Image (cartoon, rainbow, N blue to C red):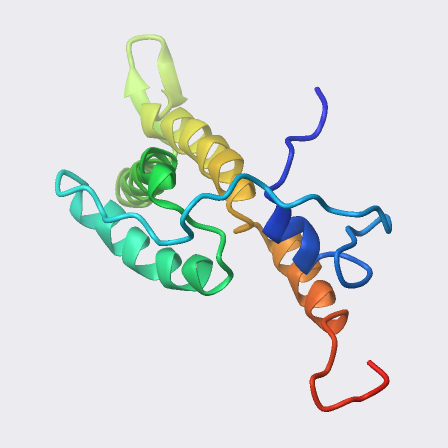
Amino acid sequence: MGRTAQPAALRLIKGRGPGKDSAGREVKPGPAFKRLPPEAPEWLSEEAAAEWARVVPGLARLDLLKPEDRAALAAYCEAWAAFRAATETVQREGLTIEAKQGMLPHPAVGMARAAGREVRAWAAHFGLTPSTEQALARGSENEPDPDNPFG
C-alpha cells in the first residue's frame, strides 16, 4: 500500500526550503479552505473531548486544520478513548481470562491492539506520530530567519 498524501502545509514544514518538500519538489498550495479549527462535537466521550482539547491547539497553530476535519478528528479522539479504556481494563483485570478451554487472552487485549492501530492511522493523517514530530522539527530548521538578510 502506498503512502497517504500529506497536506501541503505539512509537506512545506518538512521541506528543504521555501516552497519545497523534503525531496526539493515545489509544493502546490492545496485548496483554499479556511484554516480554522473545527468545533468539537458535543457528543464526544469525556476522554475523547480531553484528547481533542490536547491536540487541536497545536494543530491549529500549524494551520493544518479546517472545519471539514471535524469528523476525522472526532474519529481519532474516540479511537484514543477506546484505546485508553481497553488498556485500563487490561491493567485492572490482567492479560488473560479463565474460560472452559483454559486461560485465554482477555478480549480487551485485542480491543487495545485494534484501537491502537486506528489511533496510529488517524494520528499519521494529522502529523501526530513521533516520526512526524521529528520531521516537523527538522522542517522548522529550514524556515528562513527573518533577521538574516541572506536567509
